[in-house]
Length: 209
Image (tube, rainbow, N blue to C red; front, side, top):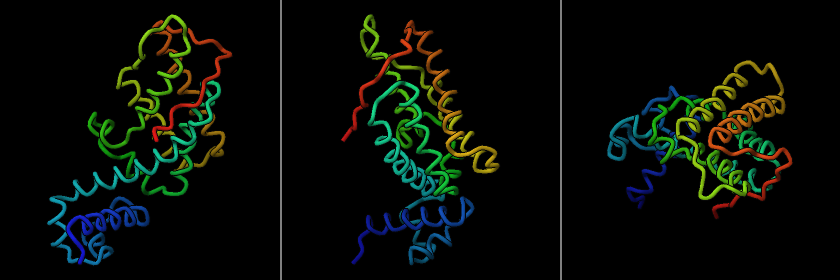
């Protein structure tokens, strides 16, 4: 017999599949049909469509983060590391355009960034890693959350434009966005008193398990 947690997970999986195939406009009825349960029973597990949407966003974020972390594993120059954080977003969007659009459209709140996406924190890890190579710096450098959220907005906006227009190749789009983020982060580090050498080479970032 399927317990409540299994039913809840089945509903999340059905919602993810529905959004992935049909877009964010899917309703509770379509999701319930995919999950094989009556629509009224959905509300035993999720009080509203917004609650279920949050779980879909969390799922898509976890999938995307799972692609980004290995891409950061190789180390290299700062621009190369940043490119490793950007490229998976374009790749994921190409494979799951509806899910990426859904994720990018979620309300940009501090709670969302901290508890669900985790993507801005990855850029923060890049900055902390760079700052560790500067001899006179003690402690961890943490850029303002607004800066990191703005950079994620830049990535999302660029990916969505690329999905809609395809006016440049995926590789060219990744390179352009990586360079833009590198410029912003370099400027932010200079404001914090960190002058990064041009020949800096970073060790691989931690894998976090």
